[in-house]
Length: 348
Length: 231
Image (cartoon, rainbow over all chains, first blue to last red; front, side, top):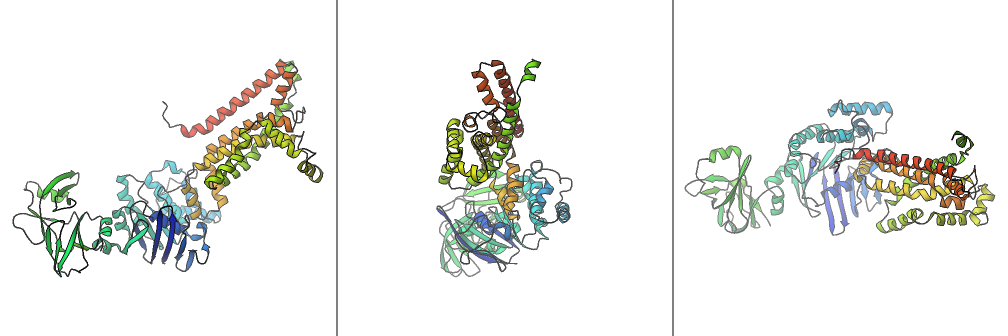
């Protein structure tokens, strides 16, 4: 199974231009709202029509401007899960699941019953969507899509309509429900946790363009550019000046790093995650930042320190609950140490 | 009292109800169809087409009746064609009643249906499409039921308007007792004769039917407002 997308679309001031080809089972598209990720999904499903380009699943052409092909959504076999689930409000759970099945009555009820069992909806068959909880609605929406047996499933911000306390479990649930689905799944989200958890391959989008693409873990470990690092949740950045193969000067933070690995000449920025610092008391060690405290925020399960750099934005140091306990009673550290493997060498 | 009722000609009630029912059926389908087409139009085209479709509601019914008379008169091309080729007569017939009532009541159906359609979450339609449902199926199984309360109240109002139609009907269909004489026309006629008892009786009938209709509309549209706080 492989999808190939190469499309352009202009909409007022906004222009979308995206091109990728992938045979990964789980693809994530990460980007801020309005970056064009939903529009990309809608184009694949045939809800939006691109101005030009082509969309293929294996060798099936869904859209091709050159060949003048634009399959109706009905013919694409693309499952689409909407942000609000778009369950048909006047149909029962059963009717919703069976809505798209053009089968004989017997076959349809058999398939619906199978879905009801798999998605744990027993007892809710006759309920209307309005009578269901957010989690149940999501299961019905997914059951309805799976009953239709699409070649690919598109999930458009499936968790954004849910309460915070439901999200965690439902994300996990959704992944296990998708486990036995053999086709590709594309998840669109602005939440990096969701994306990281879900996807093997990751596309990062901004302003209608693709910023980066790669294996999810690789992109998070080595984002290569400042904007990609920012999207993966990195909080701290400093401009950097290459000195030699193993030394780089961080002009914003006023320190020089010494690294074991070779530093490419074109590196001009460094990123460091807020959770990765190591507190140091007493003597200054290699790759240490002076601890010039600006303020501390206490969160229920986290403490956030903000430090003054030499210039530029405050440096964030976040510690989890268990570390907080270890720090309590001690004076503030004198330095924060940057671990070599956590230092991200970037380009602006 | 009994004598009065026994001597009464009930035909206006029957004619009005029949006209109302048939005109409502005609308007229901045409209104839904027109509403469905109009919401897909571009902003400018919508303004023009919507204006034309709403016109019968805005200008005086006698004007509508006059225009209909011009079109269907047996002395004019369309009227001649219908009469001679298809043996259809509109002027001074029950068909004229239906036509006049339908034209006047149509905007009520169309506008209510359109407003109800515009409230529908487009994602419902998209979801239907990605699930392979045909456009027909989507319209009748998703859109119409979801727009149910709006369409129902439109239908009831259409019936009310069609049943009470006077101006256009009197121009096009005339007031032929037992044939085209509706309640409204009967009231006007008997008042000219100074028969206030009969007029009063029909007025009460109309009041009861009208109140019943408004009550029904409130029942239908109000059920979804049940949980809204009163202030």
